[in-house]
Image (cartoon, rainbow, N blue to C red; front, side, top):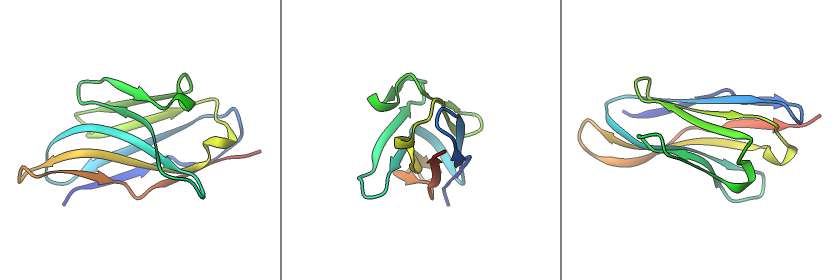
Amino acid sequence: QVQLVESGGGLVQPGGSLRLSCAASGRIFNINTMGWYRQALGKQRELVAAVTRGGSTNYADSVKGRFTISRDNAKKTVYLQMSSLKPEDTAVYYCNAGILDSGLSLRDYWGQGTQVTVSS
């Protein structure tokens, strides 16, 4: 059974930094694109950043220059380094990955979500 487990959320003051991690586990053959989404209260879930297996990245305009996504393929882990945080970054952050399991079934997986609150 494949799982994505996130960690690293919390409360931070405006201008501060946080690092989110998301580790995949289970019977995994290969992991394609990994990414982070967020959903603020009353809003739709939106893509924050994504990284391909080869390391190509893309970011939402609202986080460019402040957030950095990276991944460690050997550890099956994706990270989101968030800096210069703003109150509008407050949301539940979800990890997402396209995973080919050992049975060669490809599907999207989601983490359980981690709360990030930016407030003074």
